[in-house]
Amino acid sequence: MDFSLSEEHERVRRMVRDFAEREVRPVIKEHDRKQEHIPWVFKRMGELGILGICVPVRYGGAGMDYIALGLACEELERVDTSLRVIMSVHVGLNSLTLFQWATEAQKQKYLVPQAQGAKIATYALTEPGAGSDAAGIQTRAVRHGDHYVLNGEKMWISLADVADHFLVIAKTDPEKRHRGMTAFIVERGFPGVRTGTIHGKLGVRAGNTGWIALQDAQVPVENRLGEEGEGFTIAMTALDNGRYTVAAGATGLIRACLEASVKYANERYTFGQRIGEHQLVQEMIARMAQSYEAARLLYLQAGWLKNQGIRNTRQTSVAKWFATDASFQAASDAIQVHGSYGYSDEYDVERYLRNAKGAVIYEGTSQIHQIMQAQYALGYRQDRPLRCELPAYDPEVWQAEAI
Ligand SMILES: Cc1cc2nc3c(=O)[nH]c(=O)nc-3n(C[C@H](O)[C@H](O)[C@H](O)COP(=O)(O)OP(=O)(O)OC[C@H]3O[C@@H](n4cnc5c(N)ncnc54)[C@H](O)[C@@H]3O)c2cc1C
Image 1: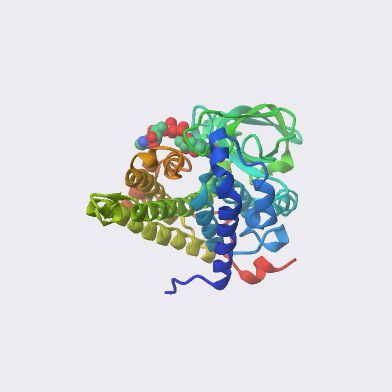
Image 2: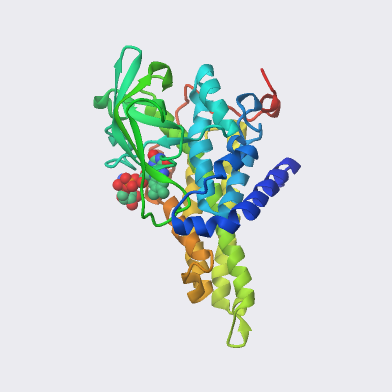
C-alpha cells in the first residue's frame, strides 16, 4: 500500500494552493461581507485548468485523475468554501455526470466548454418542497414532439444566477415516483427559464445560491440526459462525485481551523503561558489534528476507488458525513481557541464555522448519511450495476488528444 502522492499530485496541490492563497485570500473577507461572488474567479479557475481538472484532454480537461480533483478541493476550501462549491457543482455534480452518462454529441456540446471553463454549470435537484426526499420533487416534464415542456421550481441551487447550464431533474411519469424521473441539460437561454439569488444565507456568502423557475420551459429532446426514467439514478450517481468534492473540501476546512488555531495558540498568553500549553486547549487542537488525518484518508480512499472504476457510494458517503461533521466541530473549537477574537470577523474562523454548517446539510444531510451507513451495514441496501459506470482512470486515455 502506497500512501505517497505523485509528483504530479504535489504540483497540482501547490498550484491550487498558490492560487487560493495569493489571489483569493486577500479579497475573500470583503466578498463574504458584501455577500457577492468574486466575479473573476470562474475565468481564473478556467485558465488554470481547475474547472476541468479530471476531465480527459479530448473533452477540454486537464486529463488528471480523481485524486487530483480531491486535492484541489482540499486546497480551495482551506481558503474559502465558496471556491470548493464551484468544484462540487460544476465538476462533481455536472461535468462528471455528463462524462458518465452523456452521448458523444452532448459531451462535445456541453462538457467541452465546461471543462475549458468557457461555460459554468450547476445541478438542480432540490425544490421548495423536496430536499432529502428527492423522489418527492414536483417539477414536471411533458414531451411534445421534438421537445419537452418543463414546469416547476428549483430551490437552493448553487450558482443558479451565474451558471450557463443546469442539470435539471424532473418527473416524466409522476406515478412511478423515483422510477418516473428524467434528467435534462437546460441552457439559461432556453425560453421559460428564469433564475434569482437567495440573500441572507448563514454561510458561503461569497458564493451564489439561488432558485430556478421553469415556466413552460422548452427543452429539446436531444438535451435529455440518459433515458426517460433514469433521472433518479443519474441524480444519485452525480452525488457520488459531488459528495467526494465536499468530503475533500471539508478536510481542507479542518486543516484551515487547525492552522489558524495553532498559530493563535502560540501567540496568545494567559496565566504566564502560551494558551497552547494549557491541556484543555491542546485537547481541541488534538481533535482537529485527529479529524484532519481521518478525513483525509477517507476521501483519498474514495478517490482511489474512483480511479479503479469501483462503485464507491458507501465509502464516499462515509467520507462526506465524517468530514463535514468534523469540520463543523473543528470550526467551533477554532473559535473557542481564539476566544472573543474568534467571535469577530477580524479572524477567519467565524467564517469557517458559518461555511461549515452548509456542508452538513447539502449533498445529503448528516442524518441521511447515517441512514445510508446503517442500511449498508444491515444489508438493507446494495449498489446495483449501472448502464453507464464512471470510467476508471487511465492516464493514456485521459491525456490523449483524440481517440
Ligand atoms: C448552501 C446550499 C447550497 C445548496 N446547493 C444545492 C445545489 O446546488 N443543488 C441542489 O439540488 N440542492 C442544493 N442544496 C439543497 C440541499 O441539498 C438540501 O437543502 C438538502 O438536501 C436538505 O433538504 P431540505 O433542506 O429540503 O431539508 P429536509 O429534507 O426537509 O430535511 C429537514 C431535516 O429533516 C431531516 N430528515 C429528513 N428526512 C429524514 C429521515 N428520513 N430521517 C431522519 N431525518 C430526516 C434532515 O436531515 C434535516 O435535518 C443546497 C443547500 C444549501 C444550504
